[in-house]
Image 1: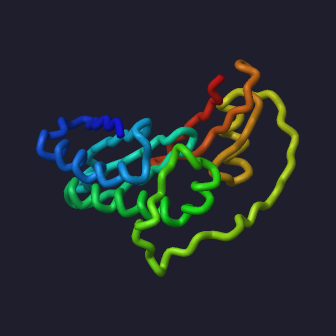
Image 2: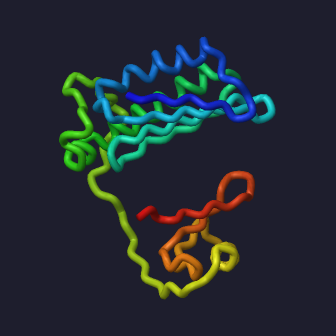
Length: 175
C-alpha cells in the first residue's frame, strides 16, 4: 500500500509516521499493492484530528476521528475503516473480485451485520443551468445538505454540499 502522510499547519514527527505505517500495514491483507492511503493530521483547539482515506480502484474508504492525541485518533480511524470493510464484505467482493482481497480468516464481529438491501428513494427534478453560487442559494432554500445542478460555465453536472464549519464544497466530475 502506498501511504502519504501530511500535516495541516503542523509537522508530523517521525515516530508518529512510523506508527501510522505500522498500523496501516495490517490492511495489506485486504488491499492489493495498488491501494493508496492518504493520512492527514491536524489540530483544532485541544483535539488532534486524523483523517485516513484509502483508494482501491474506484472504491474509497474514509474515516475521520478526533481525540486527545494522534495515536488514539489513529486507532479510531482504523477500527472505523475495518468496520466499513466487514459491513460491506459481500458487496465489495462482488464489485471488486480481483482488486479487493478479503481473507476468509478475517475475524467477524457479531454486532456488525451486513445490510441486505439499501432503502433507496427515487426523486426526479428538472436541472437547469446555474452557477455554483446560485446552487448554494437553492440548496439553502430547500434546506438540504447538498444540491445537484448543471453548471452554466462548464456544462457539467456538479454537486454543491455543506461542509463542517458552515463552508461549502463543489464536486466537479473528472473526464
